[in-house]
Amino acid sequence: MWTCIAIACSDPKWANAITEELSILNNKGLLNSQLSCVVLKDTGGLSDGEETLNALLVTAEKLCNI
Image (tube, rainbow, N blue to C red; front, top):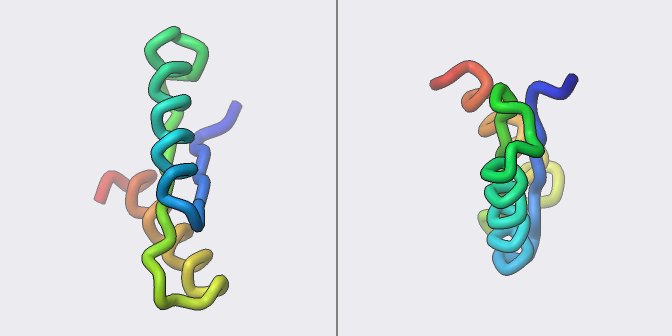
């Protein structure tokens, strides 16, 4: 069973659409209630590697309830 779904999007429209879809799936009970979902919009101005590290940091913080 998965603990977390983390998605990084370069386009804010995609990030919003994915967030909405995950919310719909969660409301229908199709996702495990223990599952953490993290959808990140690229902050801009960072390299792909920096965006990836930021996504990992945000995901780790969410999993640790920071």
